[in-house]
Length: 243
Image (cartoon, rainbow, N blue to C red):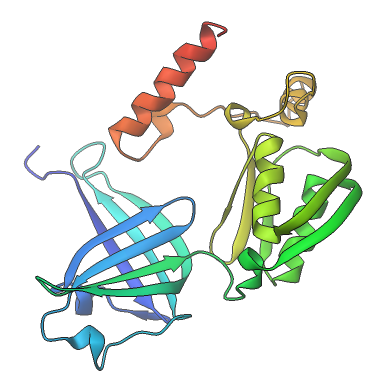
């Protein structure tokens, strides 16, 4: 391949595209789908400690273009979403600035304020809807309807509690583009053997309906490091053995 594969980030601060402005300073951009982004920049000239010094709460958005990824001339674009600047660090030798941002609402109470509440006769979607409304977030829910007779939120933040509920019922959750996104993933079910998964039940009940499509993703759908694909394949082989 004459044109090698490469990942090219594009970044905006507070609505302004700064990709060109940052090009000569940018060292690395690290993004994780658990909703965080870290940006490392050369700090030669001390600009990041002076006129360009950002502040916590600044809005950051970005995407990554994977050029020549599957074949030469074939590009993939990953929308990383919107983030809130959460940490600002400086180090020396050579001078470097590192900014860390989280894809959570600016309200710190989403992840820090602990609540105690008994939820009764609710669905996972209803819990997520109430929490999303509290922080003025949109909600995208594509999992099955899972009814919970009673569950205790005991001195836990809404963020930690909702993550725990989703994990317990085989759902994946992240905060993305000012939106809580919850999807079903049967490989992530964390229920005791005697409890049935609502996701697996829904797949079995609905699989014969013509207007409903059930899509199963494999390692071929992973657009990340090859190591992640190898891990997925290893678990698939493990599960096929019935271990």
